[in-house]
Length: 159
Image 1 (cartoon, one colour):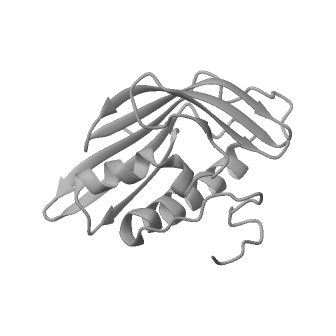
Image 2 (tube, rainbow, N blue to C red):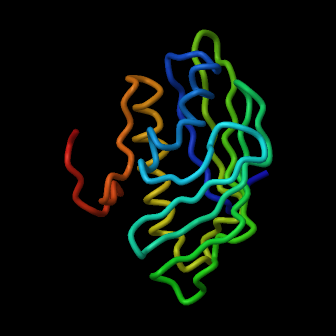
């Protein structure tokens, strides 16, 4: 069944356990500016990017080497008419073994094309998931925000 929710997936030469460790290291692939815990069930954390995006998240599922689910408790966008577009959506990371490799399936349940932020948000997620998170898993080094965006639509520096 096809849905309109944003999804991305990739396979890496790592174990599901290694993938899980990288996913919960949100500071290593999304932003060094995360406030709060990102590595246990029930934990809450805040993501902030300048005055453009502020997001409060709770970890609602946490199955080692299998799945992580975040619930967006509150959200603010500085560039949309509806500042709270993501509120109540779920961000899902599913991990599965594929022989001696691991597959990551990312879904932002509720991020759909009729959202004003859809194009910008899917570009950002693609960069974070297929770029930074994948690199963190494969090489031990992601490209999290450090005071600047890392989306494909904006200039990024190599680290």
